Image (cartoon, each protein chain N blue to C red):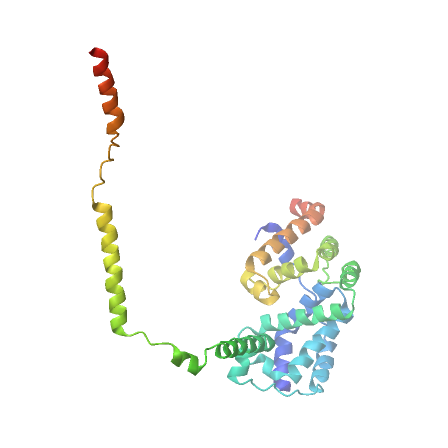
Length: 170
Length: 135
């Protein structure tokens, strides 16, 4: 079992970390949730029986844990707002100051998105998931996933337009 | 994906702190293993989504069957009813056929022309009066 957990951690923990950090926008919560996911796998190893796509399964498990955490806090909206306001570092810091500026702006813009759009945008852009796969992870229809993604991209484009134009002209 | 989306995609995501690996895996190792829930028998699995609803439906059916049995006539009442013999049915059918034929016959017969009402007294009287006048 420890070998299985180590393998799962090495293969999927970075993805889960980025997804959870993007969703919760809080590093402490992200750590707690990541630990919760692995503790759950350790105590209930049969959960992985018959799982074909480990990454999708773990992302779904992590998301459910995040939703439970927000419900436990009894103030989901408030919590989300708090998460959105913190703008933690989501990206590896670039050496180029202009890119740093863009990253900071992107982190803030992502925080301005509703959580359901943020998670779809993350899975599409950084997880490279198809809308069908996103739909499976989030328990929504592929059409809903696609429309949420479109809204997210439109909003991000609007918020980042000045910086984006600047980068394009360089 | 367009250029803007590619630009977003190129941003490298931050990596989880390396010390987390040991901490999280240690915590996972100390997690208490849970018993795998036993598989339900097939009939229970079939009822599982809403066992109360299924039980209510079963009770309703039992009630209907009970009422049906209770409202049946007693054996003595059934025996008292005279059984309808084949001859009786045949006679009834013949009678019915005869009545139908009569009805058809009545419909097909040409209607009698309306009879002229004869009032010989009045007519003759008028003629005799005319004759008298001429004379």
